[in-house]
Length: 247
Image (cartoon, rainbow, N blue to C red; front, top):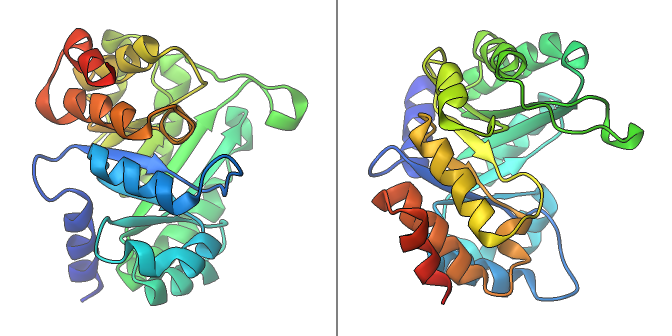
């Protein structure tokens, strides 16, 4: 029966064309109300939000029934029970660090709990030269990213979020080997055209979408930026066509 629950939840995230635009929205900012930003990205065409349990606890009444929720949780199986009670569509755990520091045994234990409870797992393995606290940078080597992605598959992930390699050909090397859907993380804050080039390359490289947090939630027009990214993911728009949404 748990497998039915997982299929039903994944159906919330991928109801139409098998593509997805996720908005990580896990911070309460002083510049604008969380609810106002959320309403804007929903109008723009976001397919899912990533939030924390605290944000969902305080804001659930404002978003219930409006958009599927992915909950960002610690790598602790007890949080799967909380996610089930909160009726989210998936849980997300992540690891940013050198490739030899990924906690694969813990990921497998966590994924087994997700399997038991029928909860989809979005795992985010992001190789870096060092930890954030040590001044680490993103690693874009496709061989290193592919190793992390395939390890995530082996440990029981259902959906993977990781770095885009920088060009469609090298990213396709990863997506062609991975049996699970891959979404690209949004990466650092860059000019709008660069963001749209990033997601266009992701889609051309076999990705199923992207997860854009600060790129959208701190944008001067979150709704327009989400709509521009949505055009590329769901309508196969060119970058120039998508840029028109920002005018």
